[in-house]
Length: 369
Figure 1 (cartoon, rainbow, N blue to C red):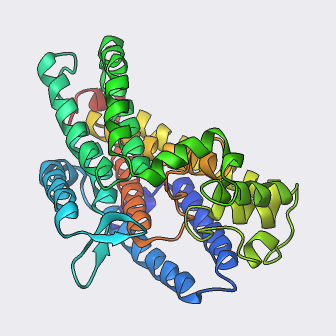
Figure 2 (figure 1 turned 180 degrees about the vertical axis):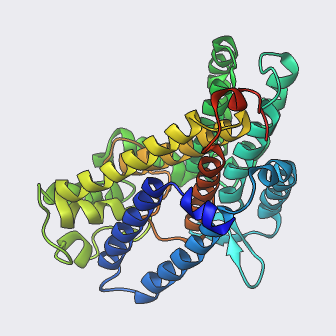
């Protein structure tokens, strides 16, 4: 069984992951070269743990993930509900739970839990009914409200976008989404009213970064300088002035893309974007050929999260989108985000493994597992 599973591993998917991992560690080393080297060492450990989990998940039957969908969702939602009560505050936001041996962000868990439960619920149900519409709203709305209250606008947007993609693929008619769009001004008013002052300033600064160049607009302006100064081939490894002189804020987390752009230039950016494109296109291909509807919906949701993570992060550091604190997949420093992403990719690999050898009629007659 072990040999057979290894033979069925999607080598292309695995290669993309390893290449992005190597590039991410190189860029992170450049970002912390003159600072805290413990950050780089921790990230290496996170990768070792993550890859171990990745290969373990490759041997877990997809049926097991279907069975754990609801328990995982409810546990994640409970953890999210505990954040306002006992959560730790970091940089003005209460987003972390400290369990002693480990500290993590429940908002990272709930995204993947929501993809699991949506895929499970709609794998064998007709979506276009009022009952299933309200189920979808409840499943997505509960965690979205709790995350907005932390506050964490970026994760909320990622969560809702991925959920909408899954529901569209599940077969929801456009009329349901037009109804949701009609309610969006009310939702926007609610979200705006629960944003902190610094978050509102981020949105206003996005419209005009130069309005406060030494305050709220400082991060975006310095990031744009780093990206623009990299040119085609970059300034060279460990030669970025914005990085070395510490003008670039949060250069090992949210703004790590700017480090890559300054030191590797357009060439380095093109390599990263190409790897992302190859990885995501492979994931979408796996979703299309999944042997169950559950697997197809699940991989689609996971792919949507990866797409929006990359799009929002690159957009915000380039001044195209407001700064919302979304990590760059597999590149930004952080244990919770990295481990959950690798785990999700392990599930994608498992879907690919189980789909190999299946013929079309078998796929059509296996809605769930």
